[in-house]
Length: 263
Image (cartoon, rainbow, N blue to C red; front, side, top):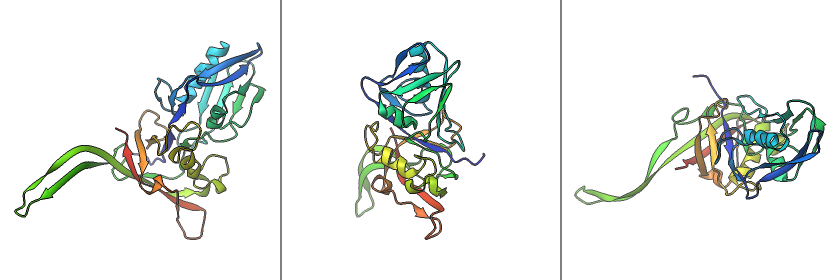
């Protein structure tokens, strides 16, 4: 199997009423709406489509024109979003700033055939070194029993078992500074620290709750195959990556020390 870097997507919750904006393809401004629900950038959430495909459908429903929306979220991708009209030009204005920010845009856009976000999409992390897991690609992890037991002096074991969870850990051992620390980003939003704040700490406007859920794709080119987790352990409280070489900020180890598969 080829070595892959993988990717992590955080859940994006669009509130009641949806996210709205307006688009003008020459015939006047039309309002488009991304409906309320839960989304991920490149895999379906509570609906049948991912966020980028849903945006494309919303633009086409509003204007009657053909659009192509995409995100460079595969192996080695930039994480940038492209919004393009298939014929002519169009301007885009954001009513919902959370939608603008989640997609990596910074303001309204004038008439053009194609608009590319100047920043990486948020609630997305694209590492630049191989993913390491205890059991390999797409194995959810270790069975953890919620149980209590006792052993009698003669060796009889009794107890109760109430549930079973699945836990794992993940590590990226040589991430560039730009993929690790906000201070070292060369494109805004590329660092795990930004992802941690938005999705694990849960401070982004679209984060319904802290600690995830997150979707881990062992192969960033495979949008259909992933495991969903909530984050626990040390990473639930602090993001403190380790320098590969003490005193050098060029490479870092990122360790998700305890994650639990979403039942």
